[in-house]
Length: 185
Image (tube, rainbow, N blue to C red):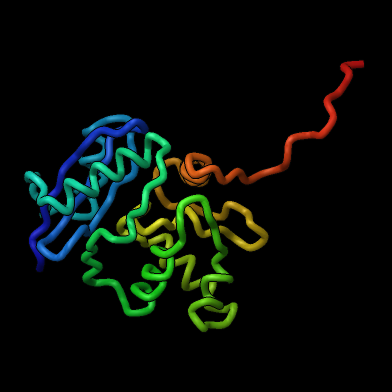
């Protein structure tokens, strides 16, 4: 088993956690209200991890994550990941999702099709998104349900968190604002 180390840090959206091995980032915990909550959630998935000073690549990832939650355009596609334990299909899906740029979205079905699979593979894409160990770094929030609907999000806060992350990127889902306001009769 690979040794994991981690760091808890604060962003404009709350406290996050990041874990890594010698091969790359292994986990990312989306923002919570406290450092204790972020650490508890991170250690739930990696109970053997130890707090440690991060290597340069992780320091750079933390800086990028902080920029993201300040609403500044950020690209996470170059950070090394350690996806040990993920099956080959999930790794292929994650590689494709990493190429979805800031402010853009796709659907589970479109992603399945882009990978050369039929519509039945949309379920596999959804399962991969639900099990994404490094949400945001692999931007699963940019993958929507059919028809551009929000779909699920397994991170704390669920679909509301997903919507907030998309809004940070300038993506607004939901009904358009009314063209005409009521006169109040």
